[in-house]
Length: 201
Image (spheres, rainbow, N blue to C red):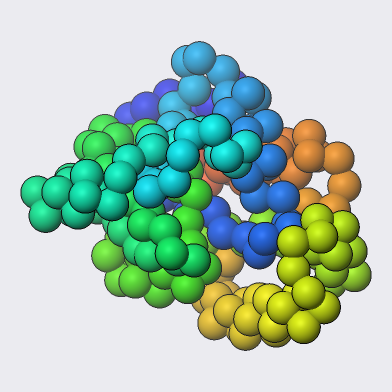
C-alpha cells in the first residue's frame, strides 16, 4: 500500500525506453497493478495517431486539434517524433501540487527539456534491456532493415549517454511483473523518504 498523500509535492516519473525495450507493455502492466486507492497517477498522452493501432491507451486527436490545444496552453509537455505530435495535459501539475506522484510516458530526446521545466520534481526512468535482446526484438518485428536497426541502436546508445546520473534504470528483460514490482518499490521508497524528511523539518 502506498503512503498517504500529504503536504509533500509529488514526483514526476518520466519513463523512457527504446523501441523494443517493452516500455508500453510495462506501463500497461503497471496500470493494472496500481490499486484504486493508489496515490500514483499515470498520465495519458494526446497523440496524433488512431486509437486502434495496438499501442498504448492514449487520446487520439488530429493535427489541427493538437495545434489548437497547444495554442490554448493545454499541454505542460509536448514534442514531435516520427511524424507524430505528443502532448501531456496541464492536469499533471495539479496532481503534483496535491502530493500525487505522476508517471509520464516520455521521450528520450525530450528529456532534457522536461528536466528544465520540472527540475528536481522529475525523476528520469529508463526502461532498458541488454543490447542483444533489444536487437533480437527489433529484428523479430520485421519492420526495419538491418541498416535501420543499427542506426536505431546507435541512437539509443547516444541518448543513454546524455541521461543524468540519477536516472532510474529498470531492466525489463525478465517477467514484466518483476519490473513493475521494482518500479513500484522505488516509488514507495521515494514517498517514504520524503515523508520522513518533511516530518522532521
